[in-house]
Image (cartoon, rainbow over all chains, first blue to last red; front, side, top):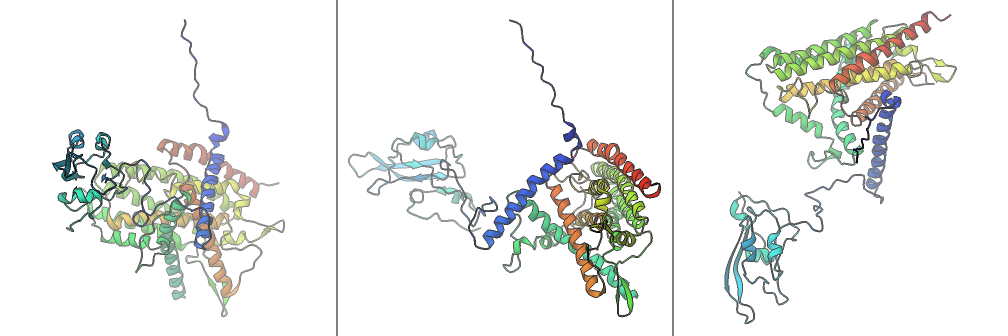
Length: 178
Length: 344
């Protein structure tokens, strides 16, 4: 079978595009349309009337950031209905973590049906790469990355480490000032 | 009378610098609104923000408080003189603009044009051309090859578009039969056919378009801002910082005000308001208001073009100037000459 060649010509500009003035006018029409539409919307908003917003801007520190439904944010440890942590200290998350940012120490669980529980569960968010492997690895669905918290910065490295009660939400994360 | 001249010159300066400050705000807000954004709105005085109106003020404070860095290889004197020359000659142009006509008050006639000269047009064009020296000087004195090449690029652009600028203005000036800016405005006061004001934009539509284009190029505004090219290409003011850089920025604003003033004077009837005879002190105020409003409208149009069109490549820029705009404006000039002086 012979190779079929289909020549593709270079796109040629028409005379109207060459003159460029009409194209300039088209561009100006777009920008002027946006300008007047947004001005009208802003004025309506300023007068207290309803209507679509004139800008897509999110004023971030005042307004909360818009996160996707599946966004991987800070880790969160879940509890059973009776309030005890779900974590059984199986070390799977610590083992799979590529950044080695999870450190668990286990202790014996007082409940008969559960062998172990975590005594400490520290995640160093300064090392975490937010890959989500810990969530995938967990056999008891004890860790999620859906705290919807992205403001994780701290003034020193020690404050980047989140402990068990902080991850469970029992204790507010303490931050030291510089 | 000397006091009156002083007052007029102060007004011209305040007009230029005030509008230049305002343009800093307009540019930010206009671009933001037409791009569905909000724009700079954080600077405020005691919590008073006024839609970011104080940002130009914050800019000025920032530029004044920044380090004024001079490279070791720079020519110190020329390096300091270049922004002053740029800004100074741009400000000189403002003096020749006819902000208003002549009004009668208290038994005397007062002219509202700071520099009343029969060759006002030549004065403005000369001063605009001298501004090129600031650009070249900045490029040369910086002691940096990038700045030098940027300066030469800027000079090539400004000189080639000044040819186009002058030839379009020559057509308009020969139509009005004068080089006096005030006379040109007065000529446009009559009505064509009893209803259409005899403004240049109706008599010289091609000239108006060409002048606007060439004017944007001379003032180095987008789409012709290759000399500056903030993000892509290094311009003549790489080695400038602080208020010296601010002066180059101001120069662009002042020059676009001058070009807008020329557009208004030659093509939009200057301070004239159609079907209205302006006289007396209130008439004088109305003249100033009409002139300022027209200048602001032209500036808004230039800004809109700036935020619409992409920047031209340098060869496209020079090609547009020498191959398209110059022949067209010369043809326009010849046609005007023929119509004015050789009409049977």
